[in-house]
Image (cartoon, rainbow, N blue to C red; front, side):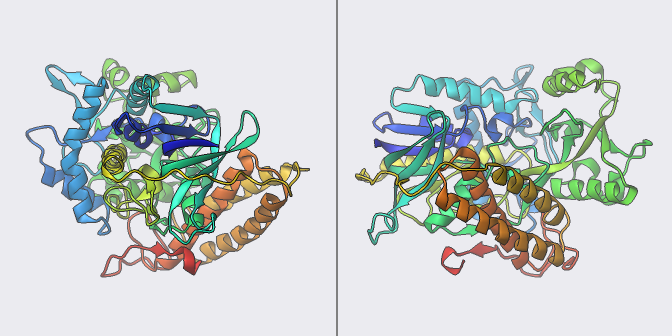
Length: 523
């Protein structure tokens, strides 16, 4: 059994921010399923929203967030995060993040839903630049141990220990490199596991985005909220060899327009803000045009800009498209929507605390009230920063949490799996019907079909989990199926169309905006 003061599950921006913000007296273990760079944070292209320009204001950033959130944002949360954004950017600059500059000041980008330029970025690979900087800092931190190729199986709760308290004392973790289960006891445990984009057939997320934290928290007894709001990014590169490659919204901020194959620009017909409308509107418009005309994709055109400017602002996209035979300085980019961000998650307070003692959830895994029914572009990395720092401050000022002796993992009654094809088949089936039935446009009938299939898969997976030794693929599928069930249950409970949730059976907006909250005891 390993012991630590703080166990961090995940290695994205929320996780690294928390680890670097904790005082050195805390012994920290950070586990990550693959290498520390395999996270949605590292893949993020656009940037981080924060008011900087004299033409901008905190009130404007707040209002843009509330507008995108379609009436479901927690206004106090929005105001606090927006107000702390400039300080969070300052912290990153102090850490050494080389944000792009223009003359004597920073170059600020603009994205859909923003009324001003306020996006701090490093070309079109902001997440990689931020994470590479912080991970280097982390490697030099003597109090932090990073364990790659480790996947959490389940949280160890007071209930599992036969204690009445609602608390978490660590986790069982599979070391996938050695194929053995370890027990990690911790005073505080932090879920920073990201979202659940891999529940869908097409996604911009890395393979690690399998809803692990949401599923573990639910099994431990935490509430979840607003999981029906899955953000589909409008512009994922459409190419057979371009797995999960995102075309940043910042490109539309620089004037790129969406076109049909013959050249017609269609976004002005769907919204007066055209290409700079919030993501839910743009994604639905593209989906509508593709289905209406039987298209596999539409096209993003930025050829109006000088080639040198395109390559300077979007070097990563230019290089990747060039590899695939597309010169974005002279050719349109084929794009289609893909699952991108999980706006709901584990219910937490302003410090990232869940309802279980000593358990925190920060970043995309959490539900803070910031994003409402649709996340405003470049508010996600900002949320990671603000809540990572808030959770660190809360842990630092709290009374020392005891690190208990924990029972080892019991696998005395299981054997090695006989046929792993079951996992591969169920994985593909889940992602396909989630895309078809729980995608950009939904109906009650589609949701019923998805729920029925999820129930059948859950039974199979429970039987498999009960009889065979755990593997990375089995754990991810188990978590993904449970998270998919929670997404569908939230979608079935919302009898209106709001933000990212659009139902043909309930196309109208209800007069009162309410969060969808699921209670484990009721499930």
